Image 1: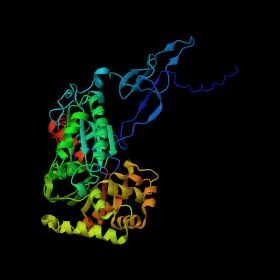
Image 2 (image 1 turned 30 degrees about the vertical axis):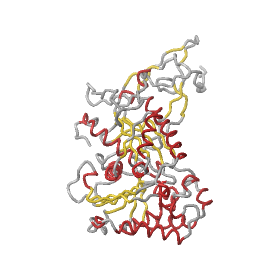
Image 3 (image 1 turned 180 degrees about the vertical axis):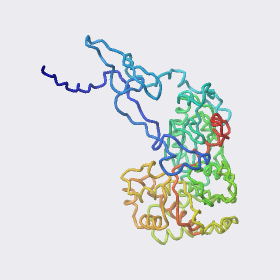
Image 4 (image 1 turned 90 degrees about the vertical axis):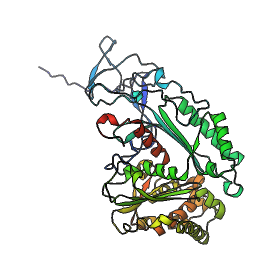
Length: 473
């Protein structure tokens, strides 16, 4: 009897009308460890967010490919098992409908943000309470939190949902360089073009927030609005035109939020950390002593802090940012060093500076830029930068390299670009002054900061992590 050889059937393309599944908005790992509630999580792979990109065609239930057809050409339902649940391929996918199963119009109902009364949006999404064990609710059922940071140089927004204890998943993000503090050092006021740029960016943020059911949000403004004569007047305009009410936070709060946002990058065996956030108009520095009993909140271990009224924008405006000679760079370092000399609490970690478990932790565009140049990235990649360790010699080489570049060379580097080319050397000068006071063999780079700290505190205070049987972060 002659055997018949069976050939594998060709792979069919997905039928017209199937949807394309995207990954989560952002650029990195799917979850962010926003506080020290998970101190064991460290490194760039444990505390980022993923970029939503089109993947292979999928049906609306998330299964790849199309429905199996029988010999008569009629679609036949095919049953599969995935993660312990029974799912069926559906043949009624509608073109253009990219919502996940069970996510109807109610899941994206608009939130009224027209002039909000406070910086915290009223709760409109109930906190899920699973009835069967610790089943994780679908993302569209989780409470949504938002954090907005309007700084001297950038306008940034994060929208996230809580996941594992002390962590969250970013579902939307926005960042734009607005240079709100442009000319502030010379004039003492926010300029009209700068305010216009910021308002346009904030309108985008307002649209994003109105497109979701936000449980709680905190919308903050920092140094530029703190020091400008017309800072409050500008925020009134933001409320009228963008429908967002921002609060101006003080420097102490800014330092605490920066620490809260970087908690998961401080490992269990760490004894001391100098955390610094080099901003556009100010630079926050916090000294953290972890030799005693460790609290879930890293901010509880701050033993001293300062906020220098100098950042990359203000320093570059005073000394020049495009053409920076070695003499000008040294003058910028000396300027910052003089301000640090007046910081009374700078020696609070002197007993730990020689310990191998002491290090610097930097969160700012300056250190992330240095890290990108150090890695020789063709395009900035947050997943490789966030959590990166750099030794003393590597930092020295990168600073020396940037000081040796002219403006055009800085513009041409993909991790700097034209937007930062006139600011990066001012940031390096601030970094060098900090390293001179607190010399360390290791620097850890954090691509995170105030927004992550806000989200961490909002979620912890709301108790969303208590369902797993552990204390909230």
